[in-house]
Each structure stands twice: as structure tokens, then as C-alpha cells.
Image (cartoon, rainbow, N blue to C red; front, top):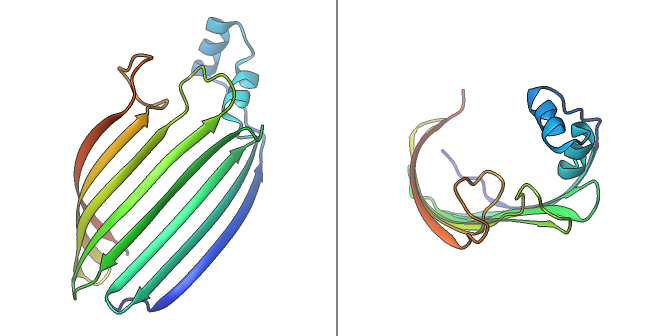
Length: 178
């Protein structure tokens, strides 16, 4: 597999407007428990009826060196709620082997009262190696050190004072294109 040479820079803006309707068992339950219009309440909390996405990215490849950096900001309809995500990575290709390191992060900002715990603050250091088994197929092993400063909506078993925890994750993946 031949590495791409040179660099690129990309900037993007996307604006999405949609009509989201929350219905079904979960929405009915929220309406009954809190005596609210679940569709209006969930649209307010999630804000997907209008979404703006800004992104910046850069990549560079020279010989065996590969560098990448990408940042995204997703702004919800009210303008006071946004999600920042991004990563920086470096890799060194040696024939079929490519060791790499990466730093990634996610941070949300919601100035409203946060009744469902949607704010999150987390960053991850990753070390891995990729092995090109055949053309269009690679095996990857990766170690992640995840530092969660503020847990979000999907975290369970945390009390209101929980924050600032670390986890380790080892993964094995097989990537292929057909």
C-alpha cells in the first residue's frame, strides 16, 4: 500500500434544519411522568431541529511520516449549546507496519439547566499499531487511556458528585474495504 504524499487543509460549514417528532412509548412515558408535552420538551433538550457544524482539518504525509488534526463544533438550535470534538494523530509507516499515537477529546457546553446530565468532558490518549494483512485489509491493536472529567448522559451508576475518573481500553480490530 503506497502512502499518500503531501498535505491538505479542509474547512467546512453545514447547516441542517429538520422537523423532528418524538413519539412512541418513551415519549409517552416522559409526558406522563413530568406532565409535559414530550415532543416539545425533547426538542428543547436535544435541539436537533436546527444544527450548525463547523469543521477544520489538516493532514500531512512525507515519506513514512503521517500527521492529522481535525476539530468540529456542533451548535444546537438555541446557540447556547455546543459540542467540541477533535483529535491529533501521528503515525510512522514501516512497510506493512504503522505504529501511531493519538490524542482525542470531547467537550460539551450547555448553559441551560442540565436535567438529563448531557454535559461531558473527556480526553483520550491512544497508542496503537496497524498491520496491513493484504491490500484493503488491516489488523489494528490499540491501547486507550481515557480520562473522563465530567460524565455524560450515557454514564450509569454515578452519583451527583462523581467526576474525574480514568479507564484503560485495549481493542483489536480488523478493517477492510470491499
